[in-house]
Length: 512
RNA sequence: GGCGGUGUAGCUCAGGUGGUUAGAGCAUACGGCUCAUAUCCGUAGUGUCCGGGGUUCAAUUCCCUGCACCGCCA
Image 1 (spheres, rainbow, N blue to C red):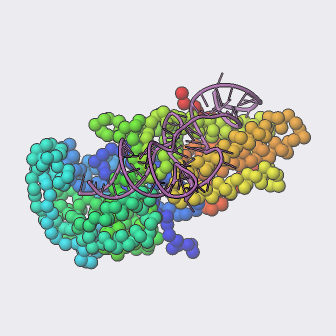
Image 2: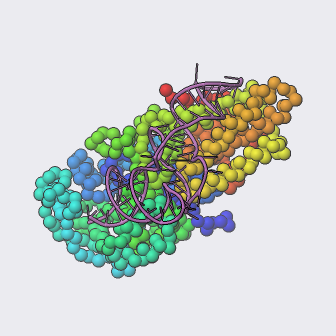
Image 3: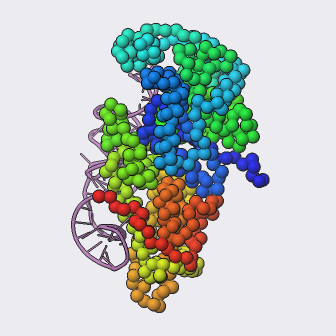
């Protein structure tokens, strides 16, 4: 209880726009966030993991109208797709926020008023191109020879009253901040992009529209609806208890990391910090922009028809193989390619041959040579000490990799243990030791070291592959890998001995 | 058009603040073991480190330039 004021580890995904059904990109961000959340919980941190949906705006209003339903009915329907997918993918979020919720309405109003009181919001005029039939605004560059890029009909210049946020007033402050905090935007290449567009002069941001009604109205001016990003970004505050629950808010804010796709970098690394400056609130500690997936070498697009439905992949390959592949295949932050060949390749060579077979052969040997009973450790044995030293090294590598969200490095480090065990078994040849009664103690130590490493593997892998990790522990006769938490969970030498291993099904059957 | 990135083994990529034999995984070939999901272990490779020029005793690594591809901005 003395830790009541300890900072809670707060991680977010973006809120996904419900005009679209979820695809591999949404799954990627959310799985990555889930792995971080599970890892942090494992180390003993209290975690708040937030995801949700962005539900306002003209597009949704239009889609709903076209379908003959209300906007609220539409979003209620689509949001189920996301909620269901997160269940299928074993996402362990602590909260799911929807921008159409009342709590968000209150937060946006409080935030808007706060910024307005600082004199950073003013009423002005917004000028742009407008396509009347499509009821859509376009910027100059989006136009196709002066015509609407969607329907091809001529667009017209319109001028509309709008509230503006004085973003330009914060440009220098943001630049200074980025200079001081060069890990605020990650990876580095993305920080460079942010610095790149900060070299140009920032313009004030139009933050309201009067051309549609599905959204949160401006406080004290019902004619205006608060526009997309000003509404959406505040969700991170809403879920943290802003503005009503001050005590909770102080434990949660600032967020430790916002995970985002690289397409929304500008909004999170420029707009959002300036909003927070204006409101006098601290900035999130980190914004991490990951890359995009192509599919079988091609850009994913609706018109090509190659959009990957994560549920279909999970159906075919299993949820943990999918999660593993996404994090192992590509350094987090880079673009990657999703292909069935690559996925199958990793499943077979890494999950089935290396890991699954290691578990299988180990459990089989304990069963055969020791009547399934898990042998005791001899802490003085050479093997025991050698493994203890190796584990020390791996533990540090994993911690360093996770601090950088370098999931591929974390998995590579963990896989060194898998490789070590397979090599070790080969070198020690337990089948030979088993034939020589005088070497029984030696055999015990060989089996112990491999069993204990497998147990630790189930712990290390539990954030990435929660189901398979649990199955591993079960076959090893050990407690569920998430049963305990704290810095000591990665400590060597805590294998429960004396009990029995349980030969189960193949962890990852080979795919043909 | 402006800014930035990338170009290394058949494939995917590491790496090097210049210096003896440039690495990993996958794929390929051969050998070994038999506990295991025909799995595991070992060995063997091959590379004008994109082209050209410069600095240097020495460049794949630094500088300039060209080409190709990619990203961000406009």
